Image (cartoon, rainbow, N blue to C red; front, side, top):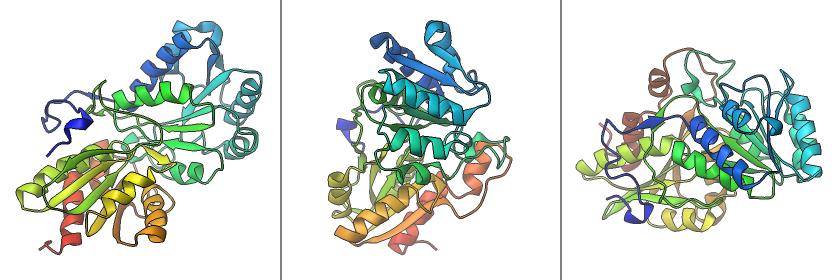
Length: 330
């Protein structure tokens, strides 16, 4: 059953549930943060409309900087602004930030532990027709390896809004990962969110498998859990928006309740969220883990829903992974 403490929408399984992109949540959140703190500035690399930075420019034109196609310079300037007391949000497609300016993020932001919020938009295969060049599938791995860097992947637009305002007040480097496609808004303004905290969404009476997911894949895990319960397969669904640092206490507690784990992420399986779970649990509580994600491939053009299914991240694929874990896949 749904965890009442998660305070989700009344019926997250309704196919008519409201859908928005997580980049829209960023647009709302950064304006709210800007009203609270005049030191917040937003930098764009010639993509202000697509990244929703445009809304901040209209509200605070004197605190918006258009850099042009210059992600490396954007990261370096942001580090300098942070040194001067500003709180810069740098925005571009994740394929270019952190994809193009990784060295500048590493050396000027992370190494100096500067409070810059790196906003990677259009991540994952669900960018759709933009194709492999724009479907960033390696960014979680890149950013979670950087010392001092916190990595957050919001599950929906409402959580993206909260993550943005939380990052503005965090005081350290943060990477926020957003998507372009509209995805179900399954959380509410009352749903708990805090950097570094995971959230139980679902628990069956006798769970055998834990579904641990990040980003919009948590909604797919939730859908799969309800369908599996109808088959008599009990699960726990753990939503993990903060990939680094992991909520180790909750991850370990959930792992001890089940016989196996399935992780789900819209990212390469190597180095990403599933790897973070496996690395931690291998040291403290070895358990069978199946990781769902992109299997060492680049993306390709297609409709977002088609690509999610093609790369084995849809609800039916999650269900099959759980059936494999329980030996009930026929």
